Length: 131
Image 1 (cartoon, rainbow, N blue to C red):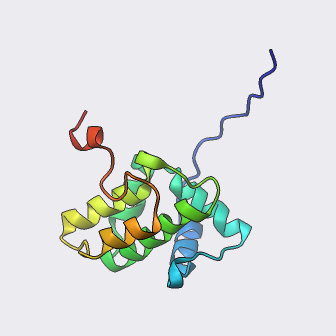
Image 2: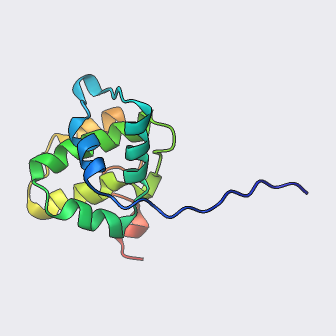
C-alpha cells in the first residue's frame, strides 16, 4: 500500500505582510487579480484558525474589516487552497462586525451572490447552537 504523507506545517503567524495583502487587494468588479505571493498570504489567513484570527482582527476598524471580508470571500472562490467551508475567516469577521453593530445590511446578499460556500456568512448550525 502506497501512501503519500506530507509534513505537517503549523499555520503562519499573521502579521504585517498579511495586512499589506489584505489592504492592497482590489475587489472592484468582484474579481481578485493577485500574484502568487499574495495568494500564498491569503491562504495563510484563510487557514489561520480562530485563535489567530481573533487577535489579528480585533483592533482593526470596522471599515477595514468589511474590506477584508470581501477580499477573503472572493479569495475562497478564486484562489486554490483558500476553501475553508464552515471554518472560514469570513464567518469570524461577520460575527465581529455584527457584535459591533457595524455589519452592513447589503453585505449578506453580496456574499451569497459571489460565493458558493453555503456556510457564509453565519457558519454552521452546529457552531451557532454552541455544540
